[in-house]
Every structure is written in structure tokens, then in C-alpha cells.
Length: 207
Image (cartoon, rainbow, N blue to C red):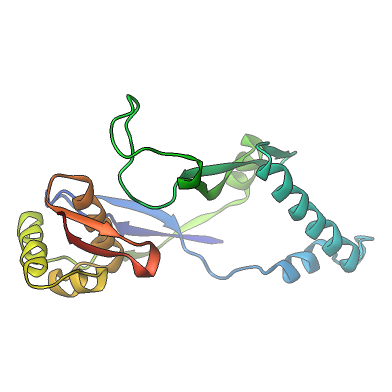
């Protein structure tokens, strides 16, 4: 029996409204090795080594065809396709061509999309028996969004750059909420911009 949990959404606009969403609690991850064992149960007539080879071959072929611009559909499972985007997180041109130009060097593969078959979703829905689990509220910052923006600007007036963990410590926001809010500040005329990606990403005053 699966368990669902209630989680509070980050208040990105500082409205004070406590919206929530629901997700399934993850008990564990079934590794590829364990998954193959489940497929090759006693009496199935399947060999674990052969199934492992087929799965590895399937993944290799999927990579190749996705890389060439195709989508891949596996019956009763779903369709896989590429997700691309600008990789440097810098300014980009709009549809009319104004802004920093985008060329092939700036665009790369960001992720792989998966769209499950409708019948698969329906089948899982029939098999899934949910019961209520715990509630998970967000750590709430004692400051408003406007106050947090001023704190960020004041910090950057005295420091060459700011990291997410610096902003997190100042404002009391959870790490993911702090990162999302800083990213939002960079997209608005706040005077804040960013450089780098991932763990090396920092925020600075826009020159």
C-alpha cells in the first residue's frame, strides 16, 4: 500500500498564502539488478544474464536514436524524447532577435522527457491503494520578499558575490526555495545577475 504526503509549496510571491501539493512517499529505490531479479522470478523461463544484456542494449540504442533527433516509443510503457535549452544560463534573444544571440554552441541537451502511455497510468491507478501519511510544512522566513531582496542587495554592496547558502543563512529559507527566489530575482529588474552553473553558480550586482 502506497502512502501520500502533504507538502507546503514555497511562497515565491510573498503573498502569505500557504498552498500545498501531494506526492507519493518513496520507500526505496529498486535497483536495475533487483528489477531484473523481479522479472526473472522462478518459473518465468527468463535468464537474468540475457535480460540484463537486452536492457543494456535497449538503453544504448535509445541514446543513439534520441541523439539523432528521434523519439522512442515502447509499447505499454511510453515515449521518450529530448529536452534541450541554452546551457550557460545567460541572457537570450527574444523571438524578434533582440538580446544576446543564441547559436548551436550555447544549446545542449538538458534532460530526457518521458510521456507514459495512458493505459499504463490507468493500470497503475487501479493497482495503487493510497493512505494518508505525514504533513511537511516549509521552513518559513520571518522576512517578506521585499525585505529579502533588500538583504540580498545590501549583502552584494559589501561582497563581490553571493552564494545560495549565503542567502539561505540570511533569510531562513529552505535551500531550494532560496535558489528559486534568487533565480527569479535575476529574471526581473532587481539589479542582480548570476554567473556559473550548478554548485559554482554565484550571484552579483548587475553592472
